[in-house]
Image (cartoon, rainbow, N blue to C red; front, side, top):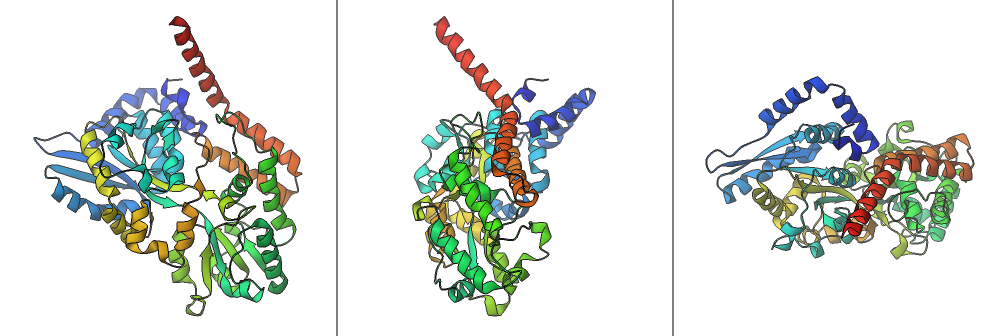
Length: 452
């Protein structure tokens, strides 16, 4: 096992192990990656390599000519990578010492690549910036990029979850707006269900999504993992409270025990009134506008998530993508200039117009009018009360275990107590390497202090 593999997440270690199995070819692969991908200065000209994913990678090309005009002698080569290949490609680049200068990195990936030592700490760059200030961003989103006391990314666009709902169906049930507390929300769902009829439901909560049990557990006060991210706390009372609320929606028939793959077309079913509420993200603002029939365009809206005790407890997930500089870049001054350019209100507004991705800077919401737009406003309000998922490299593996445990209870009838105990056991196994690393680091500090 190489030193690099010691600090990878289980998924990342598996990927690296596959590479290590081809030990003879590693030098050749690394050389090819470097010769094909790494740019060098040619006279005064500098070429930056910027990796971006999905639709963002396509659109980003349109923002670069203006940056290059403002910065003669600098060229930006944007490489678009499908989201399905992005994580593995970044890991492969790290193993081959061929990381880009700058990349779009999903917020949940920041802890992993920070643990690898792949990312450049940004605090010293931030301290001298006249463009980027933490106060200009949503607090919960900004915090996804800070691991301990160190900043590793600058929020580029943001994501969270809110409720999309049929205003007309809620109105028929006696509700003019979405309730703010769990108790009232539950009463509202019961009223909607009474009027809905057979095979119709108050809410659709896909059983193959991890976000809902995560969010409800967080709303109930759970940290999901203990203070240092060493052990799961899913069987503790706070998460159990949120989990029980979630599970009871299926037991009582308010939500169907179905996943996304069990419903052929979510938009058609929403239009037919098969369910009146759906927890989802900002990408569906455009989809609902395009896919729902004209006669329903004034019948749906969005609302922040209710909480156990009201608005302040109605937290949601802090998601999105950030701009991360790689430690191996030879052009860090120039890379930071590009990060600042993409972080200006003007460029964030243009990026929103091109992609529909929600801006990370608060000022951009006012400039574009998003903060006051009727359906986007729910996201504006929700983004002021979002929380990061646990900042550990293994967070996506843990999320998978959570949804698997929930499905075992919902579909298989496994007792809740047993499912949560087994969930903690599985999570603790996933975090075993992390505990070893933390203990080793603490021992090193203790030995150093003793030597002094």
